[in-house]
Length: 226
Ligand code: CTP
Ligand code: MG
Image: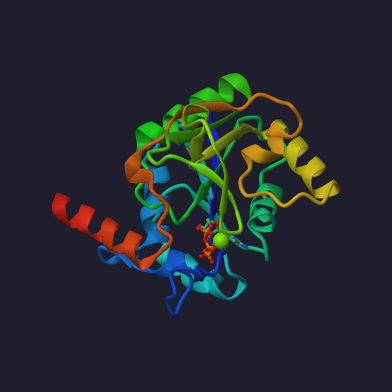
């Protein structure tokens, strides 16, 4: 099964608190966006990559990604994550019949093996995403009061890339936008239609870089591997 990637990088990175959008910050000397794009370029099932970036960063992103094989386009994103994903989805050629992957540029250390596992599961079953078990005990809290303890064994943390047969994602997005749903990931749009989403094992390395501490963690990891 062949895959096209929508690499979403159009967020502001407010929690990172930097002077530029998060995906443009360097990790070990190169922008997160470039690390992520290269990982997908190295995945055998990936045929094309579309990067979605802030509207005023298209030129900068084209320069950063100039040497990346399989890069098809750089597009402007939107206000919400789902608007950025939609921009990418609308660029998928009408005749494409494979898997669409949506990946956070903020997860620059994603591995090829994980990408391939998601493509395989999504191709076979319609939708798939990587998950990690939770390490902490999880409570439901309202204001300053604990309401209950959730059964950790039934919970998991969702990562990207999330993969979908293209028709599945089109259908799920159409319904979510029609119903005015705020999506925090793409799989959520499929789940709400009652359709199957397969969970494959995620990876610690594929952590989302959200805060300066996460950036320091990634820097240290890459440096230790030099
Ligand atoms: N994203 C996007 N378009 C948006 C919002 C988010 O393409 N309107 C992308 C981000 O660039 C990121 C991914 O979605 O690669 C995951 O989002 P997150 O980690 O929340 O990044 P930001 O929204 O940039 O960060 P913050 O929430 O701290 O502002
Ligand atoms: Mg965000």
